[in-house]
Length: 306
Image (cartoon, rainbow, N blue to C red):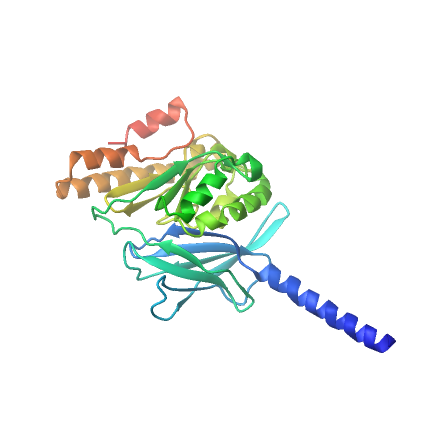
């Protein structure tokens, strides 16, 4: 009896160990973002143990056709006792305005299946709805979270812009974990792009969590702080005024200034060449998302905003 009990106990321990191991390989904090190519979408997630691979399987949401498997990358992220692996996979050759289903993970553990709608092609006149907010906290303090979840379930919008203060404050990443899990149902189904607020700045004046948790389209320096993306008839631009507050960020601030000047000039020239509708140009001008403000920074950006 004692030997049988011991064997049963060991089997139970092994089963529990395997369960815990698989749980730590299970993807969480899943979120989508437009890809750098017009027909692509990037999905990012986190695991607490290194996975054998970073995989995404996707197909048309109507179930027609086999899953396409795409391989991505994973990186080890460690900051102030917050340690995990971030995964990034880009889904390519997507038809515009089309529903797809997908799951992410590896043979170590898979997510549930989610559905998303691909975005309109750049330059098209297809309409789409954008949800824009800032300063959204985690947990009970995120008072609009239930409304966002319900709106995502009924597909009331096609794109989300979070204009700074993600989780209101990442607090070295701990609150960020709760926030991205609380809203996983939303961000795993609706593409989610960000701009930087003052609460994304960390104690060393860097932005580690923003850099490693997200994958924004066309982020030239990989920091996710300044980038642009064309969706349908709109040219979206995200820029960070936080880079102009501290001398530690001077080099990156200068890089952003040059990039933004060239981006806006190039955008204006392309629209002038196409004889774009003036109202469309005005809409695009007003999209510039800069979540922080100061008179010095406002003067700086007024020089290059057409």
